[in-house]
Image (cartoon, rainbow, N blue to C red; front, side, top):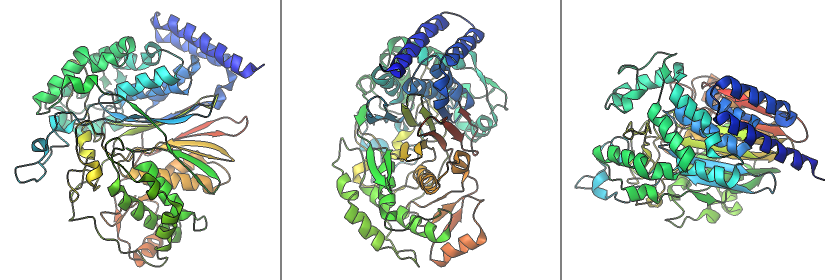
Amino acid sequence: MNFSGIFNRLQRVIGVLLTAVLCCTAGAHVAAQAATHVAAQAPNLARAAIASAHPLATAAGEDVLARGGNAFDAAVAVAAALAVVEPYSSGLGGGGFFLLHRASDGHQVMIDARETAPSGILPRHLFDAVGNPLPGATTRGGTAAAIPGLPAGLEHLAQRYGSLPLSVTLAPAIELAREGFKTDRRYARITQLREAMLRASKESALFLDNGRAPAPGYVLRQPDLAATLQRIAGEGAAGFYRGPVAEGMTAAINAAGGVWQLSDLASYRVVERAPVRFSYRGANITTAALPSAGGIALAQVLGMLEHFPVGEVQDAEYAHLLIEAMRRAFRDRLQLGDPDQTAIPVAELLKKDKLKQYFMDMRRDRATPLPPPAATGTGAGSVNTTHFSVVDAAGNRVAATLTINLLFGSGIVGRGTGVLLNNEMDDFSLRTDVANSFQLRGGTANSVAPGKRPLSSMTPTFVEDEKGVLILGAPGGSRIISQVLLATLEYLRRPQVNLKQLVAMPRYHHQYWPDHIEIEPEGFSAAWRSALEGKGHQLRVVNRQWGNLQAVFQPRGSGAAQAANDPRGNDVAGY
């Protein structure tokens, strides 16, 4: 008999019964008692772990696991809680990718909940009479917002893979929105950066304290968002994409110059996609598929490095080759876009012979001259987006990267909904010689079209080797790819796993254009910098550290799972 399977099913039944009682019983004390009771009956929860970008979101996922939910249920809870406590990074008004592994049959899939361009978008909304992009058209105002995908993604995740109803998994987020939570230093700093934008309307000013960026400890309550979450809990995604919530969002966007139609929301669908899967030095890597450029870039860089002995990512000689590989992968990014609207030569881009030739073209002593994509564009990088990683005791796992694009997105809140809307239209390529806010160029495959999904850098990833499985991802725009790449290489190089060291290691980045290496202000010696400059590389020290990597590791065998948070963020790891 499969006693493990019977135990797990019994645990889930107990969890459902307990949560049914909890949903009808007031008081967090009762919830905490019930969670402890279930956890006591499930000692194998030591094999579970959660890492997210906010302690309250991690706690929401822990609560669902303790109630008998699986990793997919916990992912719904964490994502919804982040929508409440990290409104500047993700939310119901945005989208993202959920990379899943189901332990029972090994099924792996990416849930594409990426935003889509509204059907009414026309060139005149984004370009002037002579074809030049209108300043701010994709970052500010109604034309900046794409149709959100996260609520549909949460419903899909719950219905197809979860074991608990949305009324249970959304309950922690609903309580956080209704009762409020104490904001932290990070929230205070980010609201100060966006204070003027948030003051622009009564709806967006809800994130401020009497029109000013709040001090740490301010209690932020979002009753309209609580009501929207409650509607989704009761009606599913239809409660968001139809009816009063859809009408309130559409009215706010169109009043700001947008062209949303209610049919755009009603017709939104998530897409299940086969992940990018490949092997590297005996490890099996599963990562994001298009419309993410991240998985292809990761496969290309590692495919090139496979022809060179394993090195230390912080060693200048190895960093030179790694940077050269990044430059070539980001150059190929110009060919990528929404695979449902454009034929993308993915197989050609990942051919081993092609990647070997890329490597052979590299020089060990000099940076290879590569032609620029076009005239120099402008732009400035930004820290945004969010990532969380989850594994449960059974081995189900989720790596999810979610976003509303720039900090606080478009700044537009749907009337009466509490939903802050994205400015994801900036991830499209308006013209090959024009960079977006992350200084990224793009080709015609990523041009704007109705219903199209913009290209992304989000790279949720699983890395499996003889040690176990690493689940990771990060925010940070184009720098997401290099963060995941460096962490993956460091993990594979070491026989022992040190997650805290993995998420804290110094970072560097190159994206082909602008043709310079970005490095964090600390962690790189003068000798390291001199060695790379001596090979012809230009270095640019950014003014602060970037990213917020969230990693979970489940070892092979019976060892306890681990979770670690990037010290650059305000985070907490669970279990």
